[in-house]
Image (cartoon, rainbow, N blue to C red; front, side):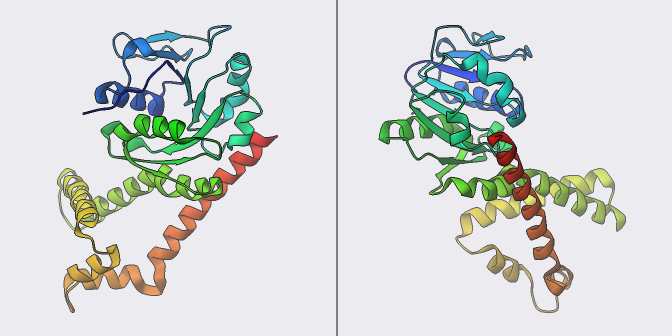
Length: 268
């Protein structure tokens, strides 16, 4: 049985991520349309019964304010929220620190969240952090994020850069890997459309087994790789000079560095 969030909620931004979160809240029964107000001048298609306005109502405040805009738009949007005094502000702005948000929008409590795109299926990852949230605020944030997938708290806000690189940007990296698997199989003669279906199903199945088996991924890889077999032959290529680990480490480092750059730009 789902748990409903009490009070009113303003969602600022209903693009890809904000819209996906909104759909999951309604489907999961944690919010009803009459509790919601979407603030988005883009005029996105919204679920039935959900109200939308271009700018925040003057001299009014919600119980919960959720920022789901692009980080670069914070200084554009913040002036319209100058009179807003939400009890809880949740921000999914990548790279924008809680102190930066607090300097622009007055809220009793700020919680940062980092969701990723698979939240649209309820199979995402959401990292949370707050230095000011009490038990009630943390519980409210958890209820809102629960329909989105795996939800875990971070002990240090600085870890958001790593989370952004891993789970925030990670789906994009996985899609590249799926494409590479399919293209490699097609080069060996498998029809391209069939290769893509097989690649997607292979990654889905492997991830499901990694989640449920209780074994570490490296142990699972070694279990599949019989001595002298086909998997071992392929792993020998990936493991040569730790090539795959080095490439992934460099990829995550680049994404984390960009997150740090966004944080620095937002402080100015």
